[in-house]
Image (tube, rainbow, N blue to C red; front, side):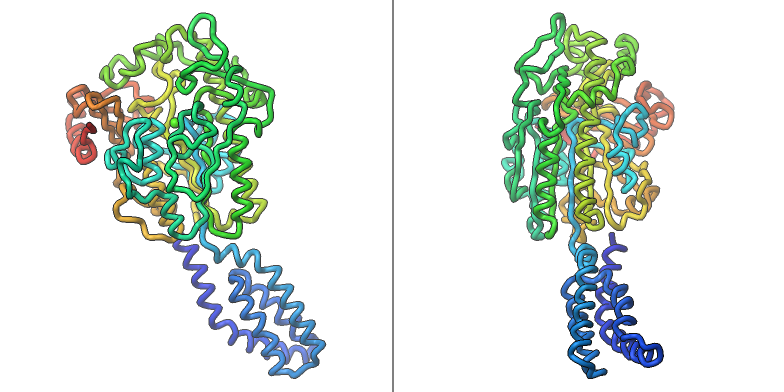
Length: 560
Ligand SMILES: [Ca+2]
């Protein structure tokens, strides 16, 4: 972006010298006119056109006035020819002004969030997934392969993203904590851009919502973050009675409590826009259209693929059930033999897959439905990208795509989130925008979701507030392989007496439960990407553990 900004500033600087240049060009044109019987406009116009490409309206207009003045003074030609000249010059200004205005305008931000989306995405290497639009976005930007949330739970993760502060810094560690009670004066990402005179609007879920119960309301939103906010509700919310919920023998249909933590599916033959996320995209496009002439920060928060897993049937059809595989539960569970009990304390009470008596077949149906929801979100992301392209806004819009945390789909016999394993801490992050010369590349350095705030501010040409816990990712956007010494820190909070802190470096994941008193975990990702072998008790790794523990210590203060 520095490059982008300096090129814009550079062109403005050059423009100050441009009238002089044009006088000389024009004089030259006069000679050509005499020699070759061409009107000077014919000669000057193409030069004028090329010089005007990167200028803003005002400066281009200044030139427009200047040229006929030169013309009149130098030539004293007839009124008629001057009029033609001005008309042609005016036409040129009109033709070039759209581009010129885009180049000089401040950067727009399109901030897109998905809920509970793990890295089961085509561009992240999952060949089964059909996610052409996220893949398309990845080609336009940088895909971060080791991006981690700060807490694998909606409320704390999202508050951390929007404040650029760790859950431990704000104290926001519970699902429904209230940000303004904990940090009344915090300046959120949206507030930052409001102060920069941006239009700042939200549609859908950015801060925590009870999903699906609070769809259609403001949920646990922070009102001060936005100037405008929209809360659509589709048939996934208004017709919940059609959702099939698996919970043992005789699956139940109907509007039951607890759909927000459920293994439940529905595949209606329906249009995208009958669903909440289709409405989120439609409204976001309307916000883009309405604000396309001013700098905007538009946040589109999708509710999928959070459970209950509801999407139009056409997305289910992309994933035939017979192609959905899961490791048999008994085998999968063996992964957990060497982990501390606290690491899975919420997940083994009602085994399997969190709910008693859920069958393997039902779990596979849920996995199919989750994938359908991913493709459904992907299609909505595509609509947003199309909307930017159609309005010629790609050249001055930064697109940031993220999810609040990862998600288990039967690996290790687990479901959902809230664990300290890679599968629930790791999230997709894709950043695309003008000036990113590494488009299409991936970055393997560990980054944190709380780095998004400083990155966006930095990218938009602002000064990163000192109090933020994250760091701008600009060095990695410039050079994805750049040296990056900052690890990713995540935490798990099951209550004051059950807490975990985890550090992820390029190679290692190391987790301490209750300061180590309730157990340790160490995984070598170079050799064991699925975290099957806990190396915490291996004597040969004692020095690694000591070093990682030391690095984790400043972040690992337990919450009350
Ligand atoms: Ca979530």
